[in-house]
Length: 385
Picture 1 (cartoon, rainbow, N blue to C red):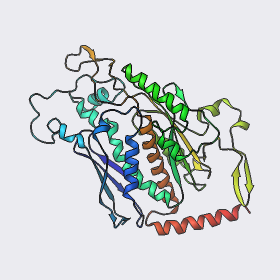
Picture 2: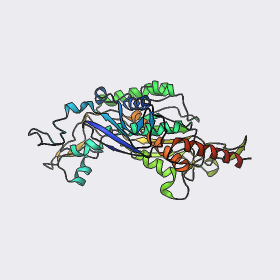
Picture 3: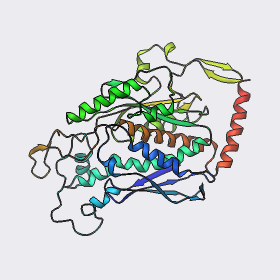
Picture 4: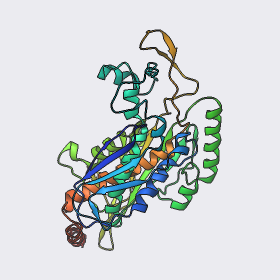
């Protein structure tokens, strides 16, 4: 299962095409729209979220609520297009009064993108580099979550820290979903949530932005998904690439992550046991991955997001026309988007895992996949007896 997106932040719509979707998969449009709404939520979001009310429109690949096996096309309208149509028109001359974006923002794709593409208007870059594009990703990845649900795999995400404020980290990695979604910052720790909101308020007052960390956890996975035979096919590689593809993500770790480097091996690796006719582990320090494959324990992915580069008190930059020092341009933006990034990462992880199931159990139709999974489970049961 793969997807490709198209569209600009202030264009008429975002489009995504999802290919290699197995036939016979029930699709619930309300689940896609729920994920789109979750991506727009979170304390610290900017004025754009007051304009957009993202809804998915499926235009192909689904009939009577079930996939046909053909590519699925989804569009998400940009309601703000009506305010940008003259400045973002696909054809015709540019308006005489058009203000080009010539003061690139440090930390954004503005300057390097302009240098790469030989443009004198950073608008051509920032429209596509904008995190608005992730709305299309979330819609696509909701298809992957529907597939995983058929195999009792659940993928959730939550915020661990925003700026200097962190939740109380416990040994458990799964939390009540209601506690996460009712938090204004999607953090299951109520006390930390309040402190995170206060930190966002302080940042807004100071014209600053904040980053943070979040965790994605997938439970119910079969062991042995992925590959040990080739580096690019390892699930670790695929998951890392997927999460790093999200704008502003600067670090990804699995399980103990960097902490494992400071521990002796006996305090890192997970002991293997047999219980009730199945292989089990005494711990999950590996975060559900060994040798590039799933262990069957919860997959734990943690990522770090840098602060959003658009600042209300802009950093110094250079005017690309005059080459003179100037303040970076201001673009309507969020103060903090860590809760939204967690939802996007949740979808990206789901897409990688859905692909792993298809690679192992077939790509043509859901019925065949389920039969193959049942056979795999039966074989695994005989190996621990």
